Image (cartoon, rainbow, N blue to C red):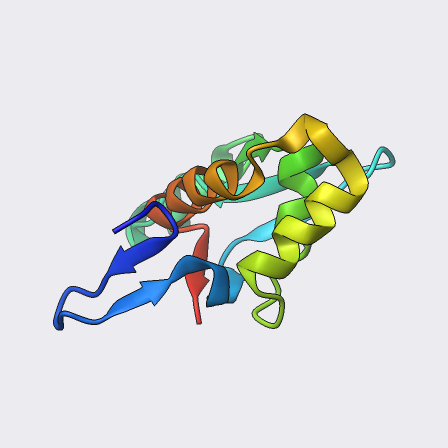
Length: 120
């Protein structure tokens, strides 16, 4: 199995990563330079959110993405496939993003592990 395929947990079928459609699960902001900041709540516990967050200066952790990650994040809308996102990266950044699909596989694994996206 290559890096573009993921093993399904409950069956022996494989899913091609390039055919999946990532969808964002976190709030985010975009700045004037077109760079994305993902907003991650500091607490997941309802109790802590209710009692501690009002006393904090910032309610969220800020995960800032570079130009590559920002372009990818903006297209994680649940409609665009990973293959299409890779083509957009190649068109915009050219050789700077090569090997594009291996890099995308690693980036999407990290986003999914951090629960920033889900695949549809």
